[in-house]
Image 1 (cartoon, rainbow, N blue to C red):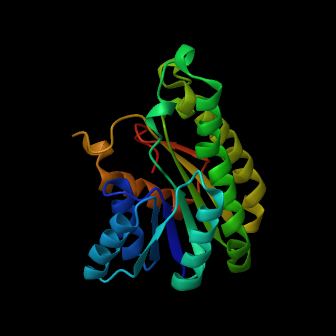
Image 2 (cartoon, rainbow, N blue to C red):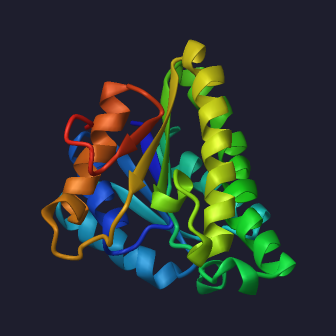
Length: 222
């Protein structure tokens, strides 16, 4: 059995994606800062017959993050799918003129260096499998800079550039890199943004292996 590692797993999109991929036969590694939270989610998945495990790591601690991924692969099977979808910190969501150098450095750690570390950790396993998927989940500022959320907007743009380059470089190895842009509140009442609907989009990106970017509001995507 292979696994999906969901970095930033929470009760909304993370849990929905865990169910969606778990139903398709994946074991699920749930990674977040709070061990009790991901352990509770893993128990809930087990009730539905999905093998899952919880792992604690702050994405700004690259050593802890790569150790969590290493443990997940050893316990649940090679990581075939990596989903990077942690919720940005409030300090990254300030207007550009209120955003400090320190804010930008932290956003860079969160949205560029952490996913790069995670990708580096899982790529050897994917290469050995001869297949794999890296899923990057971002808000609309990844595609359209928004001066009201300057830290995230800056770092998301760089994450998008990194993902685009990976998409091109890894395709010959059978590894797909895809980005889901969610320009709205998850679970805010619009069925397009319901966690289960977004999880279906992520599954479609994995299984369809289309272009790098999918935007939720594009009816032809997913």
